[in-house]
Length: 226
Ligand SMILES: [Mg+2]
Image 1 (tube, rainbow, N blue to C red):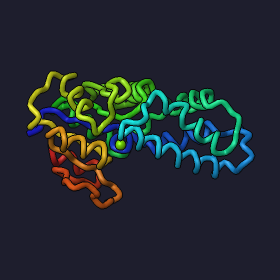
Image 2 (spheres, rainbow, N blue to C red; image 1 turned 60 degrees about the vertical axis):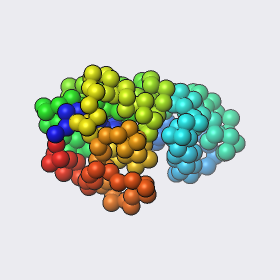
Image 3 (cartoon, rainbow, N blue to C red; image 1 turned 90 degrees about the vertical axis):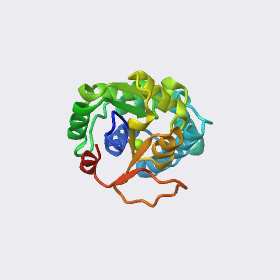
């Protein structure tokens, strides 16, 4: 039925929580912040979450986010550390994160045997490329669309247009978008006019006014759809 699969990367195929946890810990280790590291990390996450929401609505871009999250953190905590230096240190650790979610490798192997698989991700270009290209799924991927390179982020239709274009696919009816985010992956796919599958492992409530075509709790359920 489907002739092209578009898949989100983080928290759909890649274990972003593990990657982020490792990178944040390493970045702040040894930093003289004058407050407990747990507090520092909690504040970082609060600020980072707001920034990625700003990326989604288009008021922030991923080039600026690299240092902006540390700039806001250091301003908030009255610290004089270099936001640019910490931003780049964090990016270095983040790029090392290639841990996949359980079942993701098998899923990509099966999908890619049937049709092209394109990754569509909101993220920082060099981080996402390094992670994907060093991962065990790299050979199953036909294309990688990254918001920083497109200049727009999901749910913007231009991300989806770029994905179809990179594999010369024009028939929207045979495309499925799979992702864990309602506001970027699912809303973006629905607005673009393609079928969507919401990967919802925590059984969160649907807060959209629209319904995804499918909803699954585990990645292995996805194999049955295609
Ligand atoms: Mg995601």
